[in-house]
Image (cartoon, rainbow, N blue to C red):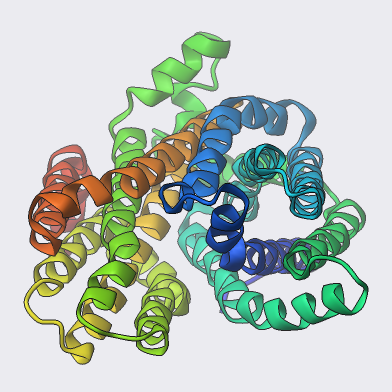
Length: 433
């Protein structure tokens, strides 16, 4: 259990519920997106275009919304993100009714812009706790994705039925219910996320700095590195932060983990379909993947705090290497089931440990929202590259080529963890030696 004050408990519950509602809304709308795209365009080649444009919106909005989170606070910044998602859902629903592919793609971009802000929910939750507890908190917020992974698809059929009964195109239903969930999340956020996590984070940082000073320890956190009067300001400080090894490793862990996961995950339905599997078997394998992504987040957060963030990033890379090696070995269902589960679990290790490492590295910095926004942009770009690139790689020599690419990128992440995280690894070895 994470020790919490009454204020921390209220804030963490608020952020968990908001994340859960956001995840459910996004997944509910995503289920029918490829079908809608094909229906509106008549071209199978365009079924992935809405997702790719959503990633473009997410990448482009990462830094501006990070700046807003720094300037206006986490509550306002996240509320703006929710507003973009609501607007995007409504535009998408209207586009379906009007039969307009152009407006549907515009709605996808708006959803990506909103997601750029909402992906920072885990950082808003982590920063209100001391460094030692942040990995567990991030794991808890990522676990909220499990609620969406389970609840989102369950909402699709009832939403379709409601839209049909009201005389509208049945595909607008999931977007309506997604917008409704986001309105609830927005109201909850504006009412309950008080005080702003940014204000509480400043108090937590001061308390930790005071405790270190009382113990006579040397404070080598970013509070002294970049928070002093001599530290660079504004954009110069952002550049300075991006050069720090911990920041570079954290961003690489999340971006490369996302790239490898997308490369293998996106091609799985086609790979299984060519092996004569039907939709139900493909759904079970993807369900195992989702379980690996979110189901063990609490354990991952605990392990990151227990064994260290850098070892967990290295472990995530190794697990994804194993997943990539297993995937082309056999088309037997148990092998694919385990491979996709491990693929999600490796992503989970790298994502939670990387998020925690980035949050810790940016503690005390006034530009943390901007740097975190840049990170979200990089993750979105990695996801878009994986989505758009896996088909071309698959055409070279099938799933083997995709698996080899996954092994290469995962091994590169493992090497980066050993190199950029060598100071952490040396400290852990010294402490336990």
